[in-house]
Image 1 (tube, one colour):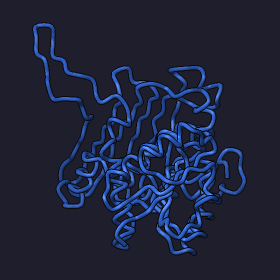
Image 2: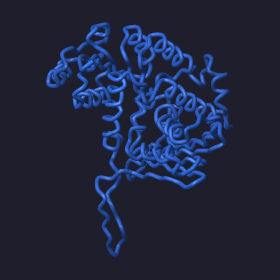
Image 3: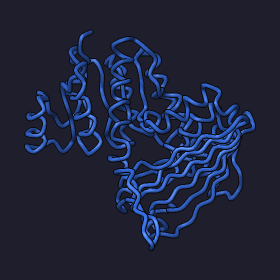
Image 4: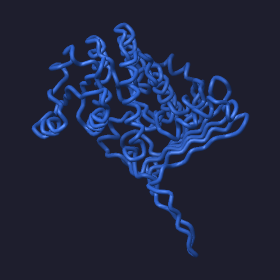
Length: 348
């Protein structure tokens, strides 16, 4: 295969980002794009990029033999049906997180992928960030010994809109799910128990949406290691993304990316520019690299670097955190699985 032809489902912000990133790769081409709100503006945008097929849904092209893979960039509640449809059509799949908000539905999607024998990569782009990837490389090389304590900070510069909050699945499924995946990634172990705390300290809109805007989660892993994750929907100084891993032989920490490294020292104090403002700036290169790795996995028939089980485990952690917050006690992931039958708390 000389080039991987791709169809994109969902032409919102993230769908267009993926389209532009695919265009940077000589080994890939965006063949088609679909969106329920496809209009003349989208067709003009696609034409400029040489995308020949624009439709309101993927039915127009999903079975086209010239398409090898799909990128699912549509709302979460469409992910499972689209994964099943793409798998049945024999297409490799890249899906944005989360796969779903239901353990049962996610498992159905993974079964469909397995039966079809296609690849499924989940969009946990932070694994491809140069800082966090370096942390994992040092851990794999034994530079800090066995990880004992993981600390992750993830804070947004501003809260999302109320419409977004209502459909997001809550802070644990929408925001902290990236950090759950990162905790697994750097600890190299599965979570056993989660204890979540959360409050509404920023905007009452979160309370109206039965959500919180400030949260801390403590994790105990199966090997005894522990982790602490803190999230906030509003950091006045910008996008705050940090990780520290303390181990038996040392520690490694990575901090924020900045527009430059200049520091100004005066009699009034020391200052520097704020961190890169939001995820599009902070993780721009990571988005490109995750796309590159997905294309490579198809062309060279390799395993993807973030698979369906990674998506499932992060979802289980998010569901356990949500349950812990509501029950006011630690929750074992085994409980989450047991309670994942139809349940209003877990959305099973």
